[in-house]
Length: 68
Image 1: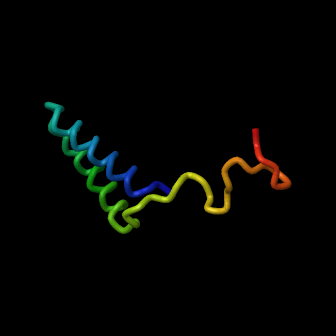
Image 2 (image 1 turned 120 degrees about the vertical axis):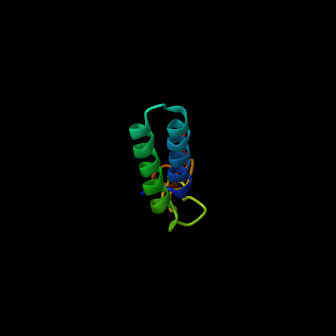
């Protein structure tokens, strides 16, 4: 699942691209896609979860040994 921060950033980039293009059809499509991403991001929690599962401990290998 993509996080709210990622989706919001992507929507922002699409809007920037839409403002820079002189092709009105492309601009409209970019704005539409940005709106789709924003609607996906809105219901998500404000703070994105990390990329690791919550039960993963850093630096600990099998059998509780520290990794190298």
